Image (cartoon, rainbow, N blue to C red; front, side, top):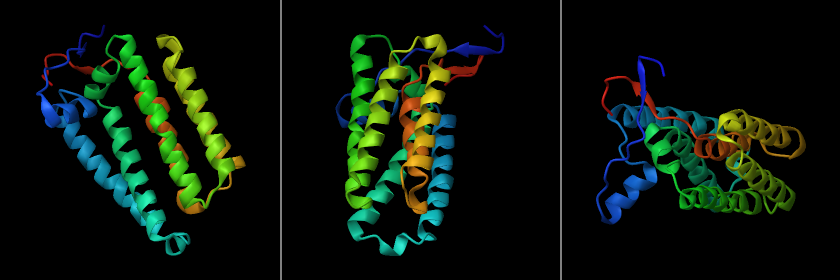
Length: 206
């Protein structure tokens, strides 16, 4: 262990009720620094994403429901990437126990709904796009989850890269949605499923 760093796997107690459930969903014990980076990063990235989408040719052609799905997907992916990358989320979603593994896989599998909404509504019923990305998600998730921890990170990066390349070269996607696959698979295969030590400078509190 480096002398200037320490690992903190301790999960603080959380309150009951809705507030506690929300805190556990986001990761208990998030530091002020993590919250600040998450908020500022999300603001910048969402603004960039919105600017790119509204400047695209597809923007004027989308219906209200299609625009709503695109907007919600963008907010969810940007926020999810940053949240799942925090020490607080790593401590919570990678704590010991078989139920935690099931939870990670269920959380990832629930994102098949994102693919269905994008493929069947925004892409006007593109079953090929939806099916291929669903297969990439499920295969990638199982591969990463059951890979030994010492090689989990490079395996996750390999599955992410493969999924992005398949989308770029073999799945027709409007220019306004080219961001979706990279962010979608980054959130789930890399940020959510990879076990990483919650590091902080030694002697600095949460």
